Length: 247
Image (tube, rainbow, N blue to C red):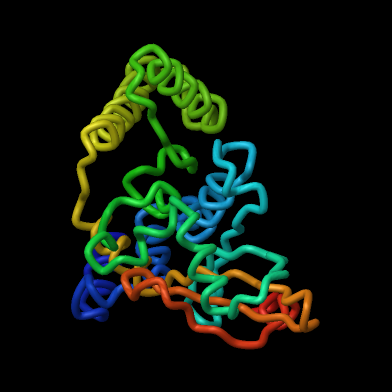
């Protein structure tokens, strides 16, 4: 029955390229009603990525946050309360600022826009296992520990599916181990599935980088907004964070 729903879902959307993140979430829930939301997983991973504790960079002391706006169908990566106390224009101030953000700057280039982005990993369905985003290091010993931990977590979280039938239990575990190895090989070898490509295209369409600027000398607040692949010149408007908070 689920396969029928998925088939009808695809037909109704005409083509993969028209799928939104919410559509992909619906598709994922068809295949597994208990699965983690793609949007929630992606947003959580992104926020964890930009957590200052996880980034060794002098440019990220005042870090970014990640937020999906359902009403606007936008995925925002934004920074709060960056102070401008120089005589340069808001535009030049923002351009100089974004050039220093090494994780973002090349994403604004039309040539480099399609490169893999580390902070997007949580959005890729194939990287999800047991409702968590997997991230391997290519260090065999460390990755072996990660895989063992995932299997142990699976056994703990889904212990109700196991029975006294050891043959059946082993079959379930072997299926999960095979899936985990498939994901491991995909990540280590930088393989990109068709679904990953669709997700990446959609993310580039809806991502906006946004920095809120406090112009201390003129007592005004602005926001600078960039779109992936559209260059480093931002869209500027007078805006306080409170106006953005509830979108």
